[in-house]
Image 1 (tube, one colour):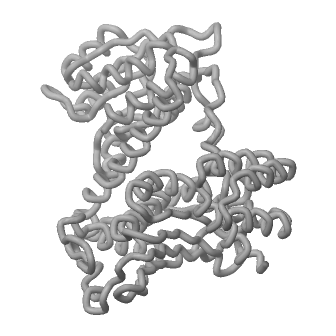
Image 2 (cartoon, one colour):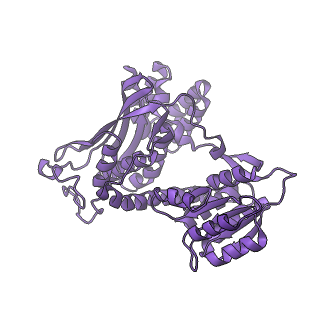
Image 3 (cartoon, rainbow, N blue to C red):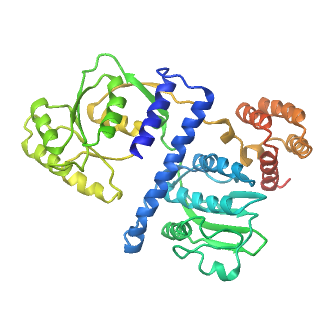
Length: 449
């Protein structure tokens, strides 16, 4: 996964900086590879988390989160899967849902992926909807949100609901038992309970299903600080030293990924293929910074770090542990061995550059990343902010599949909200009338029109 995600990210950066040229279709395919790789990584991590859940060692790790962006990404991730079947997939949230909250985004995202993925898998006709509502406004810096995934699938009998959240079990109504491992719902309930809620299911044969849960969140004031993560590093500002970086990793692919990320920026790179060689290269070369794998032959990274700390006399050399450790708890062990930072594989290039830049006090040259895909700009909250008369005209045009009229109305929307108007125009050209109609109906419901 480190190689798949790392080299995909490297190709995207090269395309953005002009070092490589991709057609629009190739760029879209590359983005799909990257998104799907991250999804697969999430599944792998959750399977590994089963051992933590069973031993009672699972913990909640809240961070600052852009909830709107998370929800938008879910729709993009699963839309293609839904299109290959027949259901339409909609993801929307009320205008009162705060954008920036403190949450365990990893667990929340995986729960919603599991619920949406099941709904798409078992729904042959109709629709799948993820709706997020604020049950109460902000009180004391906190709010309560309800997440509900509804589908028009075969439904689940009462006797099957009783065992639905048991590991390796799944409802069998209308589907083959070979579809899926039966772990997703069990893991999802554990995650939701860990975050302070529980999953409820409402279903009956032939009437579809609805899975929902409620959680409390801390509402953050102002935007989540993402400026560094959103900026693309393309070089170093002139006048800085040519720093030497030691890369210690026994896997060639992992070393090459780091080399291809760092070499274009002008670093002098030193390679080591095992722990003993990494220690020897440090003694001989005295690098300015070390990127160290913790699992290597002859001598592991923990011992390398301990020996460096015991021997160094000319100041402390920053050591960044680049590890495939499955569990966050090993961070403490890595730091105790003498490392300064913990970077888990697969890593994002922005995280790598941020850590190196912080320890070497680098000044980077940035290029702005590409704007988010236009489809993420269309949501019920933004439609709800439009005049009711304009929404009504758009809804009527969508009902009769009048593409020309929809295009005219998209131009009117653009006069009020340029980004939304452009996104509407794009979806109209793609003939995504059903999805847009659902968003208009949701906007009307939330605004009471």
